[in-house]
Length: 594
Ligand SMILES: CC(=O)/C=C/C=C(C)/C=C/C1=C(C)CCCC1(C)C
Ligand SMILES: CC(/C=C/C=O)=C\C=C\C=O
Ligand SMILES: [Fe+2]
Image 1 (tube, rainbow, N blue to C red):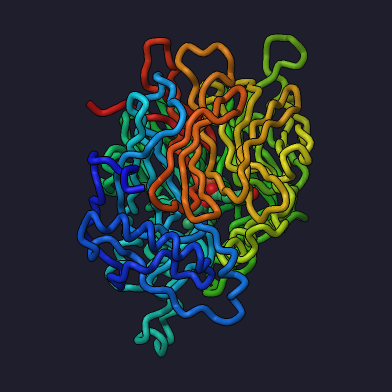
Image 2 (spheres, protein in one colour; image 1 turned 45 degrees about the vertical axis):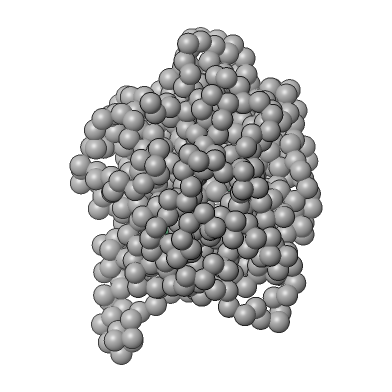
């Protein structure tokens, strides 16, 4: 195993520990598997033998497991265990053959550290951002991971406690504030000024048209620039406009070579601002604003949205931001949101050029994190778009998925068939003729992908255009979480599944082959967490969906959320870089550094 790591760079980490320098901690969650613990310890000792031990451990020792968690322990999967050290870099040994055209760096972001000392976080989305890179260089893969130095992570490390509001976690008031009758007011002010909100940018990573690489979450202050080669944190992305007052935004902007589009929800006067930022600029301009149609207090949650060539699609889900739930110290099963199906579900369509709303339709209730793609269709053949098709991973209007992503549930139910059913594709048909209603249909029979589907990507060259293939995480039942990589042919309604026993793969990322003429000519990259505590990067052929190569990490990596996002520039035959992508789930390879 030690030979897996070559001399390129070994164990860069020198600093900070959260609380303990003991090497024995892999996951302070009560649910760690004993066998896995042994395996991982073994691995970590091999790791640490190359360097001084004190630098690397970021977790404290696990608390003694309670009796009732013995069963949980048996089942804990490395996907839900914290990374063992702040950073690592090394070469991976490749089995199989990496295509010669695949050169550049793939990045993945996601929550990788779910505890501060003995305090275990509650939800998948609470974990501190951990970047993973795969640098493809002439058939070799240099890899690494590194925790993002957000203010939230640095403060937790320094004070050994949670200091900012995460997705489900709220810091406890300080002892001196317990008796202060005004401390509640102070907390509300801190919340609505954004001061107490996290900047833990653990959701996505994008490359802006000017080359800057930014990690993101749903808070605007969690827009953080990183160096894609060293994975070092550069600093906050400073928006040069007055729009940060609104505190939150979509976690999945859509980025091309020339611009970035995103949505800024307005919690006070429920609605959304649609904003556009020119490549090279830090200033977003408001292209238009859409008012929410429902009478609810808060706007619908917008984790992601979609664009076509000429339009921006603004979802208004019945799952809405809830000021009441935001103020609660203890989370509800819907966290900061509430479910208001009686107030209606809508999709709005805005012209990119004029900011006008060209359609606003009521649709059946829906729950989605991720839009896949959208395009305009001319159904009458008169030379103009008559309908917009917008696809998303739709959870059958069932909000249980949000609470299903609680770490305790994920850790204790591995192998149980408890993942709520979802469909691919939730396909919206939005007429552009002024009709009041749009449709929401199932494009591909859910049984074919195991009744679960999320974390999607497409060929980035098809952003906003009619397309045929979706790559996503699907399910091989029984499972408690998507456990397969899936390719869906929307036209033929066929599904290809790649699966190995016990795996949890992260979002597949499609890279088109330079010069390709078929939409699925390229490779699919994913990082897989294994039941035995290990992990590996996998490359599948985009067309046959068969394995081309894999490269094992010398340690287990947790689950990650998203790959690098949109970068749209058609690759040519001579390009060695392949760039990409779109929508919620997408990626790009950065050019090799010389
Ligand atoms: C990881 C992921 O997909 C989503 C993360 C979402 C976060 C961190 C949301 C945070 C929020 C707050 C801390 C308060 C305000 C509302 C909201 C944006 C949900
Ligand atoms: C991981 C996930 C849903 C999986 C369900 O099948 C959603 C992630 C959302 C945030 O990026
Ligand atoms: Fe997401």
